Amino acid sequence: MHDNQQGSRSVCQDLRRQMPVAKKWAYLDHAAVAPITAPSQKAIQEWSLEATREGVCRWSSWTRKIEDVRCLAAELIQANQCEIALLPNTTSGIGLVAECFPWESGDNVVTLANEFPSNLYPWMNLHRRGVETRLVSPRDGVVDLNLLAETCDQRTRIISLSWVGYATGYRLDVQAVSQLAHDQGALLFLDAIQGLGVFPLDVSRCKVDFLAADGHKWMLGPEGAGLFYMRSEHLDLLRPMQVGWNSVVRRYDYDHIHLDLRPEASRYEGGSMNMVGFIALGESLSLLKRLGLSSQASPIADQVIQVTEAAVERLERAGAVLLSTRDGKNRSGIVCFQLPGREPAAIRRSCMKKNVALSCRGGGLRISPHAYNNEEDLDRLMLALQEG
Image (cartoon, rainbow, N blue to C red; front, top):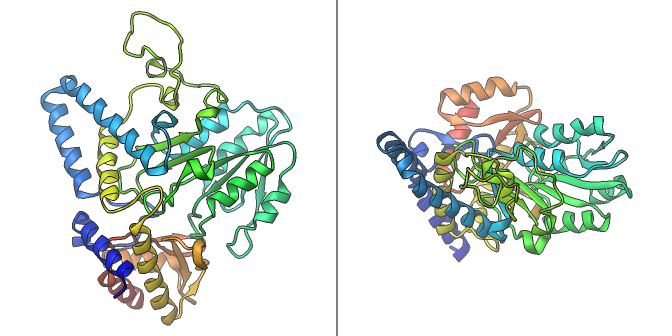
């Protein structure tokens, strides 16, 4: 067995031991809402006991843990801590840029027609301010960078793209799309929710301008705890909205009101946050880091691609029609497919009754295995599809 295969198997086994969900479910739905890790569960239980028994007396301890999460997030994508804000979800990050950017009537945003709604509606909502949203349709699920470039003009301010398509699983070359955006005089917003936690990303090298990703998918955290990144040079570009006590330099001095905004992305956090959610997310991020995930490399990604390719091979043998592109570097952990003559929703219901978790997306069924999924899970998937 090759070293990389041995490494992938080790990652699978190590992570699987930290995923209690695997005892009952063949859980192949991480692109929807992932189960949390055992360390995250423990952190939530400990926080709950502390909050119940000691209340605000433990608050300073929790805030230190929150800052640890900020450090982990920055390290994960090769950013500076001052460039990270902790927000409730991806939608909040996209909405922050959409609403706070200094638009002028006649400006436009370029994005994809098959984006998840959260990366469409905030931009479309700008039409009252005279901002046009231009949609580029992928061809057979493949994003044509030339077509993206042709859709831009001198009034294109932002190109907003998903790193990995939620329905197709198509993974963009981040450095290529960043270069494209900057060549067009635009900034790049990256919706990273379907890639972060699996694939390495260096935002400094790739020169991503803005990024948002909720932790409840591939980062294996709870809902309501997400990451937002902005290049430090853009800090004063966005007009802060929903400014609160946590937005200013002297944020704990409630008696002296002085609007002196914090010189970092955290100025956009506003007020109190989901402490328990972020503490739990921090535990999952720490686990992924211990398993080798970094901004430069990821044995987790190797295992995800390996198990996904094994699933594709089995599905094709069973007569499935793939709706996802599986070409080299554009592959991800998301695979959509159809079983000819069979209705996806009915198949999903049948699978769920057999404790096999998957979704209906993109006109078919969608599986999204993580690095802890193994051959046994695929066996259960194929049996459930056959019997369904």
